[in-house]
Image (cartoon, rainbow, N blue to C red; front, side, top):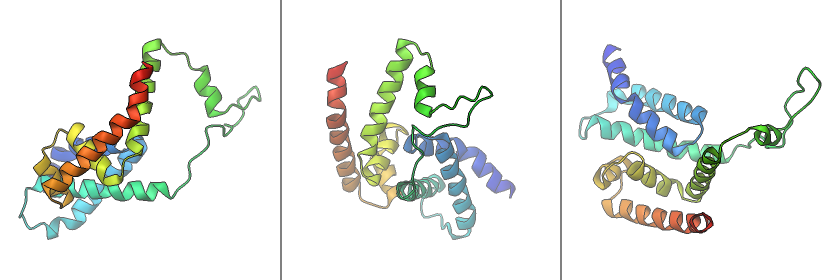
Length: 179
């Protein structure tokens, strides 16, 4: 158990970073993080040492992210116009009203808009493209490491990365022109 705790301590930030960059919700990232370490704990007896432990761990993280994404698509989300319970004055307010009431500086608004545009562009990618793009550009992993994690060839990773980059450029070109 102490050895497992050391593994968690050593890799927890990396796993959480992968989850957070793949899912933009802190709660989703925490769920993914927890599922990864549950699977690692259950699968430690099957780890054969044919690859680095980190590669094996990140492969599990990748698989959990991909699985989580497909699971999440099947579930519904709350509407932005859903009313919150009334406050003490009896006034109900929707999330869109609450967001409209928030005062922000111009920079904060621009940052939010940029983040939203990137998130929307990322959502247009297939799960594999999104994972490769995330691992390469957010986690700064090498093509070979990504290929090992995803159990595919380096050529396949390069194809996913090229296609993802092209799609991202295409989706973000109008936003670039807007600025």
